Length: 403
Image 1 (cartoon, helix red, strand yellow):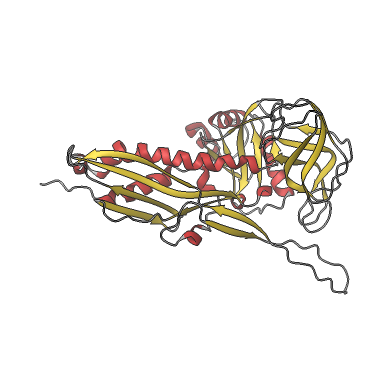
Image 2: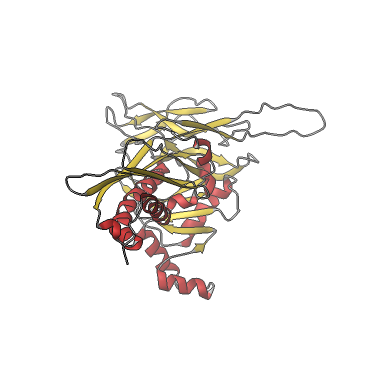
Protein backbone atom coordinates (compact mmCIF):
# COMPACT_ATOMS: atom_id res chain seq x y z
CA UNK A 1 0.00 0.00 0.00
CA UNK A 2 1.35 3.43 -0.94
CA UNK A 3 2.25 5.81 1.86
CA UNK A 4 0.02 8.82 2.46
CA UNK A 5 2.11 11.98 2.65
CA UNK A 6 1.48 14.36 5.50
CA UNK A 7 -0.02 17.70 4.53
CA UNK A 8 0.81 21.14 5.87
CA UNK A 9 -2.63 21.36 7.48
CA UNK A 10 -2.17 18.06 9.32
CA UNK A 11 1.23 19.17 10.60
CA UNK A 12 -0.09 22.57 11.73
CA UNK A 13 -3.05 21.02 13.58
CA UNK A 14 -0.68 18.68 15.37
CA UNK A 15 1.56 21.62 16.28
CA UNK A 16 -1.37 23.44 17.88
CA UNK A 17 -2.38 20.31 19.81
CA UNK A 18 1.14 19.92 21.19
CA UNK A 19 1.29 23.63 22.07
CA UNK A 20 -1.94 23.44 24.07
CA UNK A 21 -0.69 20.40 25.97
CA UNK A 22 2.66 22.01 26.83
CA UNK A 23 1.39 25.27 28.31
CA UNK A 24 1.18 25.37 32.12
CA UNK A 25 0.80 28.85 33.64
CA UNK A 26 -0.98 30.04 30.51
CA UNK A 27 -3.89 27.65 31.05
CA UNK A 28 -4.84 29.39 34.30
CA UNK A 29 -5.19 32.99 33.08
CA UNK A 30 -7.94 35.08 31.52
CA UNK A 31 -8.27 34.47 27.75
CA UNK A 32 -11.47 36.37 26.98
CA UNK A 33 -9.83 39.08 24.88
CA UNK A 34 -8.46 36.92 22.07
CA UNK A 35 -11.45 37.54 19.82
CA UNK A 36 -10.88 41.30 20.08
CA UNK A 37 -7.75 40.73 17.98
CA UNK A 38 -9.64 38.47 15.62
CA UNK A 39 -9.18 40.57 12.49
CA UNK A 40 -6.89 38.68 10.13
CA UNK A 41 -3.61 40.44 9.68
CA UNK A 42 -3.08 41.66 13.24
CA UNK A 43 0.46 42.94 13.64
CA UNK A 44 2.99 43.52 16.38
CA UNK A 45 1.98 46.67 18.23
CA UNK A 46 -1.78 46.19 17.89
CA UNK A 47 -3.32 47.39 21.17
CA UNK A 48 -6.57 46.67 22.99
CA UNK A 49 -7.47 48.86 25.97
CA UNK A 50 -9.32 46.73 28.49
CA UNK A 51 -11.65 48.60 30.83
CA UNK A 52 -11.54 47.77 34.52
CA UNK A 53 -14.78 48.20 36.49
CA UNK A 54 -15.33 51.42 38.44
CA UNK A 55 -15.54 51.44 42.23
CA UNK A 56 -18.06 53.30 44.35
CA UNK A 57 -18.17 54.41 47.98
CA UNK A 58 -21.97 54.35 48.43
CA UNK A 59 -24.09 56.50 50.73
CA UNK A 60 -25.99 56.27 53.99
CA UNK A 61 -29.45 57.78 54.32
CA UNK A 62 -32.05 59.00 51.85
CA UNK A 63 -30.24 61.98 50.32
CA UNK A 64 -28.91 61.18 46.86
CA UNK A 65 -25.15 61.44 46.37
CA UNK A 66 -24.07 61.00 42.77
CA UNK A 67 -20.60 59.50 42.30
CA UNK A 68 -18.44 59.76 39.21
CA UNK A 69 -18.01 56.49 37.35
CA UNK A 70 -14.24 56.40 36.98
CA UNK A 71 -13.10 53.62 34.68
CA UNK A 72 -9.46 52.63 34.43
CA UNK A 73 -7.83 50.85 31.52
CA UNK A 74 -5.11 48.28 30.95
CA UNK A 75 -3.41 48.06 27.56
CA UNK A 76 -3.05 44.56 26.10
CA UNK A 77 -0.50 44.77 23.29
CA UNK A 78 0.49 42.15 20.75
CA UNK A 79 4.19 42.71 21.26
CA UNK A 80 5.83 39.34 20.57
CA UNK A 81 6.04 37.26 17.42
CA UNK A 82 7.95 34.11 18.18
CA UNK A 83 8.66 30.99 16.21
CA UNK A 84 10.87 28.05 15.42
CA UNK A 85 12.30 27.20 12.00
CA UNK A 86 12.77 23.56 11.00
CA UNK A 87 13.36 21.53 7.87
CA UNK A 88 12.48 18.00 6.78
CA UNK A 89 12.63 15.86 3.65
CA UNK A 90 10.11 14.27 1.32
CA UNK A 91 10.83 10.99 3.06
CA UNK A 92 9.91 12.49 6.42
CA UNK A 93 6.47 13.41 5.05
CA UNK A 94 5.76 9.70 4.61
CA UNK A 95 5.95 9.12 8.38
CA UNK A 96 2.91 8.57 10.54
CA UNK A 97 1.80 11.78 12.22
CA UNK A 98 2.75 10.46 15.68
CA UNK A 99 6.30 9.68 14.54
CA UNK A 100 6.60 12.98 12.72
CA UNK A 101 5.34 14.81 15.80
CA UNK A 102 7.84 13.10 18.08
CA UNK A 103 10.78 13.84 15.80
CA UNK A 104 9.98 17.35 14.61
CA UNK A 105 6.94 19.03 16.11
CA UNK A 106 7.19 18.29 19.83
CA UNK A 107 10.75 19.63 20.25
CA UNK A 108 9.91 22.76 18.26
CA UNK A 109 6.66 23.48 20.07
CA UNK A 110 8.26 22.89 23.47
CA UNK A 111 10.44 25.91 22.71
CA UNK A 112 7.40 28.01 21.78
CA UNK A 113 5.40 26.93 24.84
CA UNK A 114 8.30 27.63 27.19
CA UNK A 115 8.73 31.09 25.68
CA UNK A 116 5.05 31.94 26.21
CA UNK A 117 4.91 30.61 29.77
CA UNK A 118 8.20 32.25 30.77
CA UNK A 119 7.00 35.61 29.45
CA UNK A 120 3.74 35.29 31.38
CA UNK A 121 5.47 34.38 34.62
CA UNK A 122 7.73 37.43 34.19
CA UNK A 123 4.67 39.50 35.08
CA UNK A 124 5.54 38.79 38.71
CA UNK A 125 7.25 42.21 38.62
CA UNK A 126 3.81 43.83 38.51
CA UNK A 127 2.67 42.08 41.71
CA UNK A 128 3.07 43.75 45.09
CA UNK A 129 1.53 41.11 47.39
CA UNK A 130 4.09 38.63 48.68
CA UNK A 131 4.47 35.81 51.20
CA UNK A 132 7.39 33.63 52.23
CA UNK A 133 11.06 34.27 52.89
CA UNK A 134 13.34 35.02 49.92
CA UNK A 135 15.94 32.29 49.57
CA UNK A 136 13.95 29.68 51.56
CA UNK A 137 11.51 27.39 49.69
CA UNK A 138 8.30 27.12 51.79
CA UNK A 139 7.81 23.85 53.67
CA UNK A 140 4.65 24.84 55.54
CA UNK A 141 1.15 24.96 54.11
CA UNK A 142 0.68 28.15 56.12
CA UNK A 143 2.73 30.11 53.58
CA UNK A 144 0.29 29.21 50.82
CA UNK A 145 -2.70 29.80 53.09
CA UNK A 146 -1.30 33.28 53.75
CA UNK A 147 -1.20 33.83 49.98
CA UNK A 148 -4.89 32.97 49.97
CA UNK A 149 -5.41 35.53 52.74
CA UNK A 150 -3.74 38.18 50.56
CA UNK A 151 -6.17 37.38 47.76
CA UNK A 152 -9.14 37.36 50.16
CA UNK A 153 -8.15 40.75 51.59
CA UNK A 154 -8.14 42.13 48.05
CA UNK A 155 -11.62 40.77 47.29
CA UNK A 156 -10.48 38.07 44.88
CA UNK A 157 -13.44 35.85 43.95
CA UNK A 158 -13.67 32.46 45.63
CA UNK A 159 -14.95 30.65 42.57
CA UNK A 160 -12.63 27.72 41.92
CA UNK A 161 -10.41 29.77 39.60
CA UNK A 162 -7.40 30.23 41.85
CA UNK A 163 -4.07 28.63 40.95
CA UNK A 164 -0.60 28.52 42.44
CA UNK A 165 2.41 28.00 40.18
CA UNK A 166 5.59 26.70 41.81
CA UNK A 167 9.06 25.49 40.89
CA UNK A 168 9.97 21.79 40.95
CA UNK A 169 11.82 22.31 44.25
CA UNK A 170 8.92 24.22 45.82
CA UNK A 171 6.59 21.41 44.83
CA UNK A 172 8.89 18.73 46.22
CA UNK A 173 9.28 20.59 49.53
CA UNK A 174 5.56 21.04 50.14
CA UNK A 175 4.58 17.52 49.01
CA UNK A 176 7.15 16.05 51.40
CA UNK A 177 6.02 18.29 54.24
CA UNK A 178 2.34 17.35 53.86
CA UNK A 179 2.60 13.69 52.96
CA UNK A 180 1.50 12.52 56.41
CA UNK A 181 -1.41 14.88 56.96
CA UNK A 182 -4.98 13.64 57.01
CA UNK A 183 -6.85 14.14 53.77
CA UNK A 184 -8.69 12.14 51.12
CA UNK A 185 -7.00 8.83 50.38
CA UNK A 186 -7.19 9.54 46.65
CA UNK A 187 -5.31 12.83 47.14
CA UNK A 188 -2.59 11.12 49.20
CA UNK A 189 -2.28 8.44 46.52
CA UNK A 190 -1.78 11.12 43.89
CA UNK A 191 0.94 12.76 45.99
CA UNK A 192 2.79 9.47 46.33
CA UNK A 193 2.36 8.33 42.72
CA UNK A 194 2.92 11.61 40.92
CA UNK A 195 4.65 13.86 43.46
CA UNK A 196 2.12 16.61 42.85
CA UNK A 197 -0.33 18.50 45.05
CA UNK A 198 -3.49 18.59 42.91
CA UNK A 199 -6.03 20.90 44.56
CA UNK A 200 -5.06 22.02 48.06
CA UNK A 201 -5.55 25.09 50.28
CA UNK A 202 -7.98 26.67 47.83
CA UNK A 203 -5.60 26.50 44.84
CA UNK A 204 -5.09 24.29 41.83
CA UNK A 205 -1.37 23.53 41.98
CA UNK A 206 0.83 23.67 38.90
CA UNK A 207 4.53 23.01 38.56
CA UNK A 208 6.29 25.09 35.95
CA UNK A 209 10.04 25.11 35.29
CA UNK A 210 9.63 28.59 33.80
CA UNK A 211 9.00 30.31 37.15
CA UNK A 212 11.13 33.45 37.05
CA UNK A 213 13.88 34.31 39.53
CA UNK A 214 14.04 37.82 40.98
CA UNK A 215 17.24 39.50 42.12
CA UNK A 216 16.74 42.03 44.91
CA UNK A 217 18.44 45.37 44.32
CA UNK A 218 21.77 46.31 45.96
CA UNK A 219 19.92 48.39 48.59
CA UNK A 220 22.28 50.07 51.10
CA UNK A 221 21.79 52.66 53.79
CA UNK A 222 18.75 53.19 56.01
CA UNK A 223 15.96 54.34 53.68
CA UNK A 224 13.26 56.62 55.08
CA UNK A 225 10.33 58.53 53.62
CA UNK A 226 11.43 62.09 52.87
CA UNK A 227 8.67 64.62 53.53
CA UNK A 228 4.92 64.31 53.12
CA UNK A 229 3.20 62.06 50.59
CA UNK A 230 0.04 63.10 48.77
CA UNK A 231 -2.89 60.70 48.51
CA UNK A 232 -2.86 59.00 45.11
CA UNK A 233 0.92 59.23 44.75
CA UNK A 234 2.54 56.72 42.40
CA UNK A 235 6.04 57.82 43.39
CA UNK A 236 7.69 57.82 46.79
CA UNK A 237 10.38 60.32 47.79
CA UNK A 238 12.98 58.78 50.10
CA UNK A 239 16.40 59.48 51.56
CA UNK A 240 18.98 57.72 53.71
CA UNK A 241 20.32 55.49 50.94
CA UNK A 242 23.96 54.88 50.17
CA UNK A 243 24.90 57.89 48.04
CA UNK A 244 25.53 57.82 44.29
CA UNK A 245 24.89 54.09 43.94
CA UNK A 246 23.56 52.41 40.81
CA UNK A 247 20.13 50.79 40.97
CA UNK A 248 19.54 50.72 44.71
CA UNK A 249 16.07 49.36 43.91
CA UNK A 250 15.25 47.13 40.94
CA UNK A 251 11.94 46.73 39.17
CA UNK A 252 10.03 44.06 41.06
CA UNK A 253 11.47 44.85 44.52
CA UNK A 254 8.83 44.86 47.27
CA UNK A 255 8.76 46.98 50.41
CA UNK A 256 6.47 48.09 53.23
CA UNK A 257 6.19 51.43 55.03
CA UNK A 258 6.01 51.78 58.80
CA UNK A 259 2.50 52.65 59.96
CA UNK A 260 0.86 52.01 56.56
CA UNK A 261 -1.60 49.11 56.38
CA UNK A 262 -3.66 47.85 53.49
CA UNK A 263 -7.45 48.07 53.22
CA UNK A 264 -10.13 45.87 51.74
CA UNK A 265 -11.02 47.39 48.34
CA UNK A 266 -14.77 47.03 48.95
CA UNK A 267 -15.21 47.93 52.63
CA UNK A 268 -12.11 50.18 52.92
CA UNK A 269 -11.52 48.63 56.33
CA UNK A 270 -7.92 48.15 57.40
CA UNK A 271 -6.64 44.61 57.08
CA UNK A 272 -4.24 45.20 59.95
CA UNK A 273 -1.43 44.00 57.67
CA UNK A 274 1.30 46.20 56.26
CA UNK A 275 0.52 47.23 52.69
CA UNK A 276 3.16 46.01 50.28
CA UNK A 277 4.36 48.09 47.33
CA UNK A 278 6.34 47.05 44.27
CA UNK A 279 8.96 49.15 42.49
CA UNK A 280 7.98 49.60 38.83
CA UNK A 281 11.32 50.81 37.43
CA UNK A 282 14.99 50.52 38.37
CA UNK A 283 16.15 53.56 40.34
CA UNK A 284 19.45 54.80 41.78
CA UNK A 285 20.26 57.18 44.62
CA UNK A 286 21.87 60.57 44.04
CA UNK A 287 24.98 62.02 45.65
CA UNK A 288 23.05 62.86 48.81
CA UNK A 289 21.42 59.48 49.18
CA UNK A 290 18.03 60.64 47.88
CA UNK A 291 15.91 58.34 45.76
CA UNK A 292 12.45 58.75 44.21
CA UNK A 293 10.86 55.41 43.34
CA UNK A 294 7.96 54.72 41.00
CA UNK A 295 5.64 52.31 42.79
CA UNK A 296 2.41 50.32 42.63
CA UNK A 297 -0.24 50.47 43.94
CA UNK A 298 -0.79 54.19 44.38
CA UNK A 299 -0.67 55.37 48.01
CA UNK A 300 -4.33 56.37 48.27
CA UNK A 301 -5.81 57.04 51.70
CA UNK A 302 -9.44 57.81 50.80
CA UNK A 303 -12.04 57.52 48.06
CA UNK A 304 -13.26 54.68 45.90
CA UNK A 305 -9.73 53.52 45.02
CA UNK A 306 -8.35 53.65 48.57
CA UNK A 307 -5.39 51.30 49.13
CA UNK A 308 -4.02 52.27 52.58
CA UNK A 309 -5.38 53.25 55.99
CA UNK A 310 -2.92 56.10 56.43
CA UNK A 311 -0.36 58.08 54.47
CA UNK A 312 3.27 57.48 55.44
CA UNK A 313 4.77 59.89 57.90
CA UNK A 314 7.97 61.80 57.26
CA UNK A 315 10.92 59.55 58.19
CA UNK A 316 8.74 56.41 58.12
CA UNK A 317 11.05 53.44 57.60
CA UNK A 318 11.07 51.32 54.46
CA UNK A 319 11.42 47.57 54.92
CA UNK A 320 12.54 45.72 51.78
CA UNK A 321 11.44 42.13 51.23
CA UNK A 322 14.67 40.14 50.93
CA UNK A 323 18.32 40.87 51.56
CA UNK A 324 20.38 42.84 49.05
CA UNK A 325 21.16 40.93 45.83
CA UNK A 326 19.24 37.81 46.97
CA UNK A 327 18.10 35.67 44.05
CA UNK A 328 14.68 34.18 44.65
CA UNK A 329 12.29 32.10 42.49
CA UNK A 330 8.91 33.83 42.31
CA UNK A 331 6.03 31.40 42.58
CA UNK A 332 2.64 32.93 41.82
CA UNK A 333 -0.68 32.40 43.58
CA UNK A 334 -3.38 34.07 41.53
CA UNK A 335 -6.96 34.27 40.41
CA UNK A 336 -7.58 33.74 36.70
CA UNK A 337 -8.46 37.42 36.21
CA UNK A 338 -5.10 38.70 37.48
CA UNK A 339 -3.45 38.17 34.08
CA UNK A 340 -4.41 37.82 30.46
CA UNK A 341 -2.78 36.41 27.35
CA UNK A 342 -4.04 37.42 23.92
CA UNK A 343 -3.11 35.63 20.70
CA UNK A 344 -3.96 36.61 17.15
CA UNK A 345 -4.18 34.95 13.75
CA UNK A 346 -1.14 35.76 11.65
CA UNK A 347 -1.80 36.44 7.96
CA UNK A 348 -1.21 33.71 5.38
CA UNK A 349 1.26 34.90 2.71
CA UNK A 350 1.00 34.27 -1.00
CA UNK A 351 3.76 33.01 -3.29
CA UNK A 352 5.06 30.19 -1.07
CA UNK A 353 4.82 26.42 -1.37
CA UNK A 354 2.20 26.03 1.35
CA UNK A 355 0.85 27.93 4.31
CA UNK A 356 -1.64 26.95 6.98
CA UNK A 357 -3.04 28.48 10.12
CA UNK A 358 -4.97 26.67 12.81
CA UNK A 359 -6.91 28.33 15.61
CA UNK A 360 -8.70 26.92 18.62
CA UNK A 361 -11.42 29.40 19.50
CA UNK A 362 -12.25 27.68 22.78
CA UNK A 363 -8.70 27.88 24.14
CA UNK A 364 -7.74 31.03 22.26
CA UNK A 365 -4.69 29.52 20.57
CA UNK A 366 -3.48 30.24 17.06
CA UNK A 367 -0.41 29.01 15.22
CA UNK A 368 0.77 29.48 11.65
CA UNK A 369 3.06 27.28 9.60
CA UNK A 370 4.65 28.24 6.27
CA UNK A 371 6.43 25.66 4.13
CA UNK A 372 8.75 26.22 1.19
CA UNK A 373 10.76 23.83 -0.98
CA UNK A 374 14.49 23.70 -1.66
CA UNK A 375 14.96 21.90 -4.97
CA UNK A 376 18.71 21.55 -4.51
CA UNK A 377 18.41 19.48 -1.31
CA UNK A 378 14.90 18.05 -1.62
CA UNK A 379 14.06 19.57 1.73
CA UNK A 380 11.12 21.54 3.02
CA UNK A 381 12.18 24.49 5.22
CA UNK A 382 9.33 25.53 7.49
CA UNK A 383 8.60 28.21 10.01
CA UNK A 384 6.17 28.00 12.91
CA UNK A 385 4.96 31.34 14.32
CA UNK A 386 2.72 32.65 17.07
CA UNK A 387 1.77 36.27 17.83
CA UNK A 388 0.83 37.14 21.40
CA UNK A 389 0.84 39.68 24.17
CA UNK A 390 0.68 39.41 27.97
CA UNK A 391 -0.77 41.94 30.42
CA UNK A 392 -1.46 42.18 34.13
CA UNK A 393 -5.15 43.05 34.42
CA UNK A 394 -5.65 43.19 38.20
CA UNK A 395 -2.42 42.86 40.19
CA UNK A 396 -4.32 42.81 43.48
CA UNK A 397 -5.64 39.36 42.54
CA UNK A 398 -2.18 37.78 42.66
CA UNK A 399 0.48 37.12 45.28
CA UNK A 400 4.13 36.20 44.88
CA UNK A 401 5.39 33.17 46.81
CA UNK A 402 9.03 33.77 47.66
CA UNK A 403 11.32 30.74 47.58
